[in-house]
Length: 366
Ligand code: CUA
Image 1 (spheres, protein in one colour):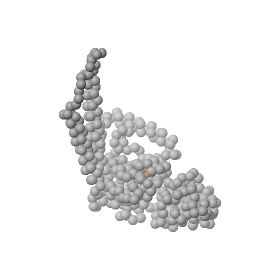
Image 2: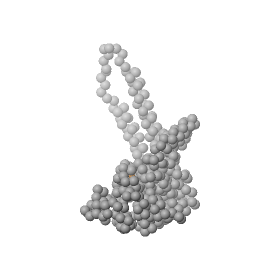
Image 3: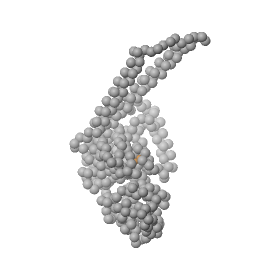
Image 4: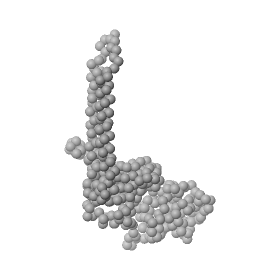
């Protein structure tokens, strides 16, 4: 519905602006993860609408904007008119004494109050709709962690998608035209699951579940963000949402959720993929820089002292056991200087083969 406001020449300008952004993006590509293109025709217009709730939310938004504009013009207009009408006409002119006007005061209180109730009721009706999923919805579990999203499908066991701080990867796959119900929680701090194209934004809170449902209406790829400041890499807590035709959904889900060694791939390379796809990179660097967790760079040969005062010197022999223990029971040995509370156990998330590949990857970081 927004396109009716857009003049064709403005669309050209938007394209040119997008081009410039692309050029700038190239230089910054090293540091900042590359996101899918901005889903707007204009930098100031609404994002693409790709869910069943988008139009309703846009309409409410535009209603509020129209209301604002109307009152802005009214108030500023009347003010200007009064300034002119009641201007001082001579040096010794006295202002007449005015106390109040009950009728006008009642109106300027009652009219805005009624309008506010209309806005509230409108929003509340939409909110209740968004919180009441239909019974046949596809279930999706979303977990927020510093700083990646994990998405699981209880109806499709074993499928797990994870976002990556290095690059936007597909983190949520949904079919077009079928209701999807999200049950969301956080393992650490407040996050907010935000898909502008779906007009979906809900806080993801530790210690409780928040819900949302939607039906995607448009096939394509859309941005996913974290919209609540949650620490260092908050701005990299991004991903890509893929909406597919219903008949392609299940096959694509299986393919994307697979994290298996490829034919001819070395354990080390497989380990690197796991590092990026299972969120390890959110906390462990591979270049020696200090993040939330100890760096994996040159771990072999390093002497690690733990919070309980004990220590080990990591060698090629004990690396396997040390890494495995840290992956499955992260609290067993916490390196001094780190809290260890951010590290989730990967029990049941990574199998033996995958852990072995991670070990080989760490071994290669000399
Ligand atoms: Cu998670 Cu910001």
